[in-house]
Length: 307
Image 1 (cartoon, rainbow, N blue to C red):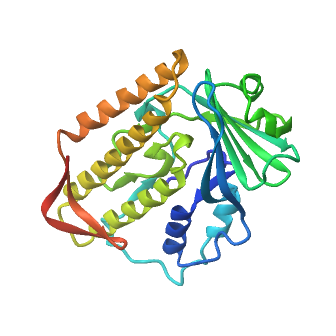
Image 2 (image 1 turned 135 degrees about the vertical axis):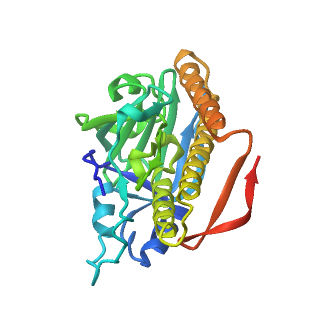
């Protein structure tokens, strides 16, 4: 496996479905034990929008802590594969082969919450040139500012700024726009995780998608041991990832279309370009020749088509 050296995300918000998926994959029910619980989102999305409280069920955990909790014991013995069937899973970004659909940058900043800030809530607010996401982790919190540095966006904020006592120094920034690599696979290699695609954090599904990608990648590699039509398996892998990326772009579009203004319209235009690119690559009909049953692929007698 080719590993990535990117920085770890300081705080992840992981919903119940993704928790269940992770626990099922690792056959454990203690992975999120003791993690901080979030029971609602408080959202102000739209020009002059009033805050809306939305029930939510999730946990807050840092990527480093989650990675530590997921570490499995070493296997008693490594599986045997044929000498000519070794595969490389690429997890490091190759920007030369990336298709970016946006330009927005996220800044991660530690903050201290006010005593009046509900500890069981996370806070989301759209602004003229970006959006804010505040995720309490106790007295402390993490602020994600997308579209500009946190102090700049907070100066226009009504909702999120009212929850913050003080800000720390930014600990880093990263692209917050969707991006996908192409090619996604080839002879004896697959791109997975950040090497394959990255989601806008507004979707909240980055962790879940990474897990689903890994399941599919392992299923494809396992299927090549008994299926001589490797090209068909790789085509299925690429089509599934493209379809998932298209679905993500369509979800993001709903959020970015809800605001007007130069910044929002520019980002919305790039999302639309991405959706058009995906549809062109997939063709007029999306056909899948395989389906997952558990963690293994099985062929579909007549290719399943999604309009």
